[in-house]
Image 1: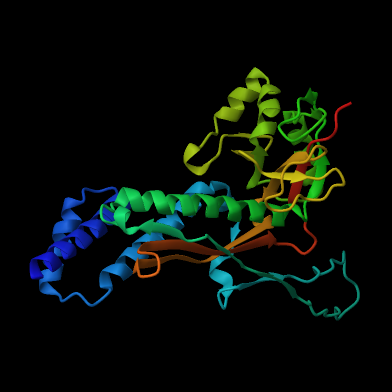
Image 2: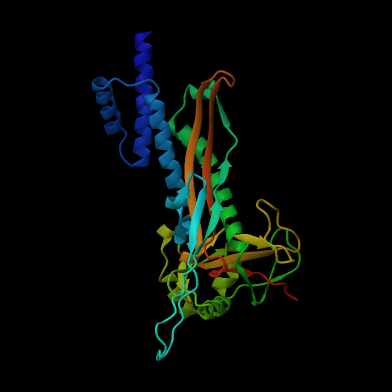
Length: 348
């Protein structure tokens, strides 16, 4: 029985070593040997390895989330302001003081500034559990675990990001596209007006008039709209555009003062001008949209990220895995200023 325990212990240590090796891009031999030495010196408490595995996966979840959603890095991060794990308060400054030219009346009248705050709650996003039968667990490797958790994280990341985009778009100023007619995509009927770069130029002026700061402006363009945007660029514009590409941070280029990113889908609006609900299919009269914003106009908060794991579950005759993320966001200003939706218009 003792040799069997030793063998199982070595297998567990090797699994943890593989986690560490993949996360820190190193050879698994060094962490494996280190863990063996430590286990000989320090007695290993019961379930200690399980907590190490869960903590390792928690770090993996966080890193994977930000990697898959690079555009979220270009918003104001409220993650450190989450209260009780669920609530975020955003202070809203009161009215600015008046200015008097050549003041002749003294003393001046003191006016108390009345500040308010905007509150938003984090939502809980959780995956349905995945059951790994015992016959699979016998040969369980990191690649198998990564495959399972990869599925969970992929769907979590997409759902959380989709929902955040919807939350922001609800308060967005709508700007219609004015380009030449483009064919509808699957689900739509009738042509839509394309999104030429001149529409982004007009939006730049619109944001200047709205006194949105000129630095740190971003736009997330739907891939289906990006084709007409890119083809509208002249050779000079295309050269200027691609000069600022930053693949590591998801930036495909820069033009008219905007850092430009793309995504397979951003948001959609119904013909009545309302944002389509999370997970709703694209309808015949719906319109694709892209979002433009200033970095300090949008708030994102990520709370707890957890992996749940039942090993050797007696009811399932194997292992059960699931994941959970707490996340939320909104437009930071109460008046909604600083967020714009570029929505397809109907083409004749």
